[in-house]
Every structure is written in structure tokens, then in C-alpha cells.
Amino acid sequence: MRPSVIWRWPLLMAALTVVGLASALLGEGGAWWGLSWVALAIPLVVMAVCVVRR
Amino acid sequence: MNVRSLRRWAAVHKWTSLVCAVFLLLFCLTGLPLIFKHELRELLSEDPPYAALPADTPRADLDAIVATARRRHPGHVPMFVFVDDDEPKVTVGLLPSPTAPPTQTRLLKFDARTGQLLKETEPAETSGPDFLDIMLRLHRDLFAGLPGELFLGAMGLVFTASVVSGIVLYAPFMRRLAFGTVRWRRGRRLRWLDLHNLMGIVTTAWVLVVSVTGVLNELSRPLFLLYQRTDVQAMLAPYRGRPVPPLDRLSSVEAAYTLVQRDLPGRTPTSVVFPNNRVGSPHHYLVWTKGSSPLTSRLFTPVLIDAERGELAMVVDLPWYLRAIQVSRPLHFGDYGGLLLKVIWLVLDLVTIVVLASGLYLWLSRRRSPIEAQLAEFEGVADEA
Image (cartoon, rainbow over all chains, first blue to last red; front, side):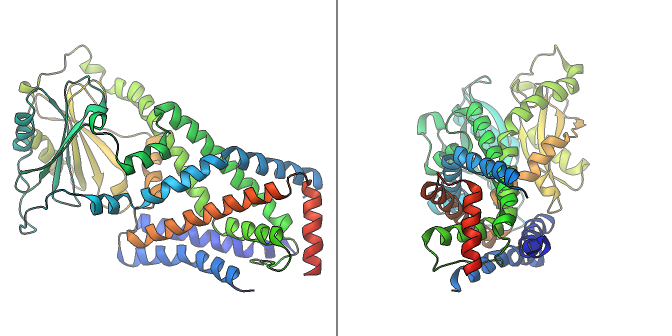
């Protein structure tokens, strides 16, 4: 498998995490916090989907 | 990656993980209650409620509050006044003498509007630490002070190396597997390897941020001491040789606080430290201020007010390394995005414990097998899958 394929999902998860961590730091409440929660929750949801599917 | 470098990275991952495993577990377990420190303190609090007053009720005079505290403990000296901006609270810290250790600090909590004393907290030295204090000390320094902080900081660095080596090893192990593959029917070891890889790589960015900011936090005390002994001493050079002014010659604390509010728009004063020989300046009130935007509200800037004349002496520009520590704090604690962010922090912490436990299981179950044999075995099974 090509490196770009191997790293596609991990890089997407990392990018979402960085967006989630930064948005709550740069903005107060409302949309900023919402973006932070969603961006940080997506990797957890992806992980949960991978774990529960058999 | 050739076999030689694969073997090297595997050795780095194995040994760094093993060295820090116990401490990582300690960080994760003690960090769990600390994520909800504020909520737990509120829940367990037996403090009397604040007076029900209109939201625009003005704050009581800080000099009057300090005077009340001193009347209650005439032999003590005031060390600081903290003005909370989340709740109507003013806290005065008193010490039995200016040279007494901080563990002897007696805290008096006042209603900020009425100036009424609400609660008095005995010094930690006599009352003993509560559950959250114990968790914090274990998490921060193992009850060993600065040596403990430096040791745990080193463990944080070792853990960071473990994470980086884990990232390097991810690609060779995933060469023939789609992202998120968990081979449930190929035996327990493969199942846990896949879960370890999946959970580890998904949480990598968060884990790296929390570990690096944790290391920065562990370095905060020595870096503040360095700053105190270099930059602060240079700033205070014009005052060298002058004695610390006695309490009865100090200017008004309230005036110092309102002066900063008035002369530095956009900055909110949060606390006033009395002149002392330990932190800050022996000749100034040190007023800590914070900015008004979400980011600058995390950046605290000290302002020096001449303690006798009551004049603005200096707005101190902190060096980059102290700014980095200030920004790193919320990113480590996860306390900057509401309760839901704390819940996400909790889940990520729990996932990290699973990654740690699965890594230990993988090591215990096949510790004599060389990395290239493991890789060949996994790839073989992947080919079959």
C-alpha cells in the first residue's frame, strides 16, 4: 500500500484534532466551542465505528 | 524502511514505553479527576452561598477586605489578594510571617460585593491535603517538589519519544491493512495489536499535545525561578538596597487595582501580590493581569505598582518561554472549552490507558520475538485475511 494511502486517515484524524484543540483556544463559546467538540469527537467516533464493526 | 532501522525504531518504542509505563498510568489515572477539578470542588464544597444581589452590584473595597482579614489574624501578613472574575469572590492569602513557607498560607474567602467573610481555609500544613490535592501532587511531582517535577518532566519526554517511535512503526505494520482494520478472529494477540495501532494512531495528535504541554508545565517552576533571578533582578536593580516597606507605609491595594484597570484598557487585573522578597518585587505590588480575547485571557502579564507611592512603575513583558508555558496550560488541562470538552478529554484519557495496557500485553505475550519476525507474521496473516 502506498504511504499516501496508509497515512490518509491518520493525517485527517490529526488535522481534526488540531482544529478542535485550536478552535476552543482562539474563540469563546458558541460556534468556536461547537467546532472544537465536533472536530475532537469525530476521531473518537471513527475509532468506535472501526472497533464495533466486525 | 529497512529491517535494521525498523529494529532500531522498535527498540526505541519498546524501551521508552516500558520506562515510562508506570508513570504514564499514574498520569492518566490521577489526571481523570483533575479534568473535573472545578466541578468536583463545587460539588464537594460546603461554603455558604453568595448573597443574592443584582449582577451590577459593585465590588467591595479591597483595602476593607484586607483589613478584615488582618483584624482576624493580627499576627499575620497579607501575601496576595485574588479577585475572581467567574464568581463574586475575593480571596486573601495570609502568612504568619513574610518568610514563612507557602504551605502555611491561610486563605480567607470573601463575598466580593458585601465584603463578608464566607470561609477560612486552614494552611495545608495543618489541615492536610484533600483528595484532589493528593491527585494533583501525584500528577505533578510525586510529593517530591522540584526534583519530582523534573523527574516526571523527563518521563513525559520519554513518553513523547515513545509516541513518535510508535508513529514511525505504524506504517510498516499497516502496509497491507486498511485503516481501522481489527482482526477479531485471528487470535487475541493480533486483535490487541490492531486495537493498539488503531487507538494509538487516532489519538496521536492529542497525546502528543498533552505530553509536550505536560513537560512544559513541569518546567514552569525552574523557568520562573530562572526569570526571577535574571530578568526580574535586572528590572529591580534601581531599587536594590532599599528595605521592604512596612505594611503601614504601603499605599492602597484598591488604588493599585483600579489604577491598572484604568490605565491599561483591555487588561483585567486578577490578583495583587504584596511586596515580598520571594516572588515579584520587594518594593512593588505585583498585579497580575490578563487579556480580554479568548487567547490573551490565557496570557498573564505582571504589572508593577510602586508600593509606597502607588504609581504605575512597569508593565513587564514576559519572555517567550513563560508565554509558551501559559499557552500550554489549557492545552494540557482541557479546561478551556466547556464541560463537553472535558468529557472528550476524559474519553481520550481512557483510550490512552487502553493503548498503554494493550502495549504492555503485546510485550508480555511475545517479548522474545524479534521485530522483523513479528512483522512477517502479521503480514502473513494480513495476506491471508
